[in-house]
Image 1 (spheres, rainbow, N blue to C red):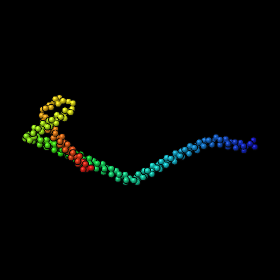
Image 2: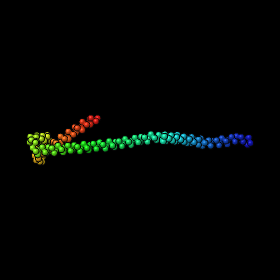
Image 3: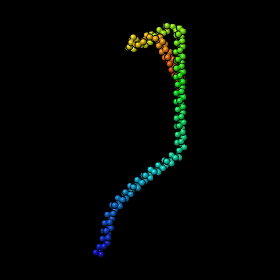
Image 4: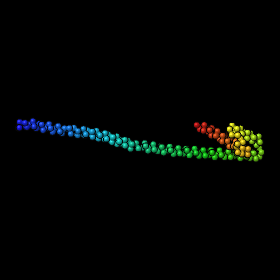
Length: 176
């Protein structure tokens, strides 16, 4: 037995290696995977830290962009306000001009300056425009009642509106 002692020692070492090495290899693989994950996370954290530092160093640029956007919005609001104000003034003047022309037409009619042929032309014009529609003139209620007044008032309103629309288009063309 004494002669077999070194072999027995080697056998025990071999047995120990056979049992413990697979566990050590598995542990080494786990540690390598964890190390790779940690390195990836550290890389991401370093990138995030660098990005935050870059953002904080360029804060003045962001502040100037923010102020520029604010001023642009303020200017847009002012322009919209002025545009609406101008539109309302134009609308007001248009209405005043329309009312003035209507009053002038009524005065002229009451003073007898407008001839009956003028109102007859308007009447035939309104009848002609109605005849293009499939509904006969006789089907319209009150078609003959106060037709002179209605046609002159309608023509004044549409004439004024057409003139003002042309003037606005010309002004817009000049601006462009």
